[in-house]
Image 1 (cartoon, rainbow, N blue to C red):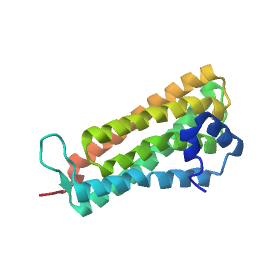
Image 2: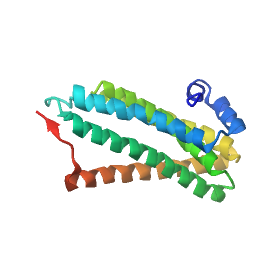
Image 3: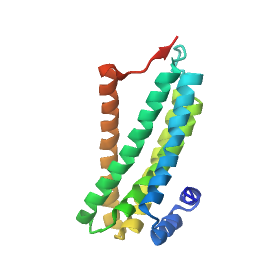
Amino acid sequence: MILNHIWGLYAHPVEEWKTIDERHESLRFSLSHILIVALIPCIAAYYATAHVGWNIGARETIQLAQSSAIVMSVAMYFGLIGGVVALSYIIHWMAKTFGAQPSFTQSLELAAYTATPVMMSGIAAVYPELWFVAMVFLAGVAYSVYLLYSGVPILMHIPEERGFIYASSVVTAGLVLMVVLMAGTVIAWTNGFGPTFVG
């Protein structure tokens, strides 16, 4: 089963990281995991923006045309996958600095499983209230960071002290990637690729 590690990462993360480290599935397996999990926020965002509408404060509900919502959801899907693959390249590239020598598959496993809670928090978009989505997203980010800090020493086979610095560097790189994705979205919107609103 492609998603067989998800429950373990929530129920007993340290033991699950050890299981992942012992098994080391194929590159295709890790890619399949992220391809499926990345669908969750995209489908939820499409449903919320095209069929329910966002309610931001006291303003009226904001809703997108279905065609526009589909385009944005597809772009979001590829952006999420691209972000995870880019993060795995960064993890792999930084490894030697911290005395680790992982394969690219190990780096992708770390990036994919660490990103899972953030992506799964996207299900909150089906109830499109900004405060609710923000709270669930922050909880997802916090748990992803916890998974990263607990998983780096295990998957990279380095001491916890070095793993802490390594994980901190990965968090910083992840934040930079997030800013790059957001900046890319703003640039696309200002150059005529913005959404079409209904009403």
